Image (cartoon, rainbow, N blue to C red):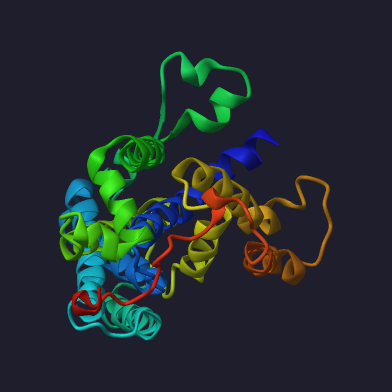
Length: 308
C-alpha cells in the first residue's frame, strides 16, 4: 500500500500544477480550456531543452515559458480582442497537440540524460521523511514534488492573504466594480492568465522529464481536461486542489497496481475511473450552494469598459 500511495504522489504532480494554473486563470475571471495544449507545449519544450542541453533548470524554464506563451496568446485574443474564451481555449488545445507532435516527432523514444534524471531523483526531507507511513509517502520524493507543495502554500497565501490576491479575486467576481475602484483589470487578467499557463507548462514537463523520462507522443493523455474538472472539485482552493489531485492521481495508476493489491478488475474499466469521476464532478458542481464553492461571478464573461 505504501508503494502504491508513493507512486500516487508522483501521479499527482502533473494534475496539481495544471489545476493550480487554471485556478489562477479562473480566479481572474477567464476560463481557459486550453490546459491540455499548454501542458503539451510545456512537455515538448521541457524535454527538448533537457535532451539537447542536459540542464534540468533550463528545461523547467523552457516548459514554464512555453505554457506562458500559449496562455499569452489566449489572453491577447480574449482580453484585448474580446474573443470567445471557450472557442479560443479549445483552439489552443488543438494547437498544442499538433505543435507537440511536430516538434517531438524526431525525439520519440529518446531518453532524458542520466544527469538530469539524477537531479530529479528522490530526496528525503530530514525529520519529516522519518515519520512513519506519512513520511515515506510524502517526504521521500523528488524535488519537483516539493516544489508542488511549496506552490500550494504560496498560492494559498497569495489568494487569501495579500492585496494583489484580493484584487485578483475582485476582478474575477465583479470586473466592472474592480475597474471602478481603480484596479487595472486587464493587467491583472494578463498576469494571472500567463502565470497560470506557465504552471500548466510545468505540469506537462513533469510528465515528459520526471514521471516518464522518455519522450512519447501525447504524453499528457487527457490530464488537462481532468485538471479543469479538478478546479471545480477544489472549489478554486489550492489546498483542496492538492487533495483532489492526489485522489485522481491514485485513480490514474490503479490499473498498474491492482494486481499487487489483490484487486482484479478489467483494465479498460479501471482506466475509465478518472474520467467517470470527472463527469460526476461536473454533475455535482451544478448543485453546489456554498458561496465559497461557486465559480467567480464574472467567470468567462467578456468585459467591455464602455458598458460599465
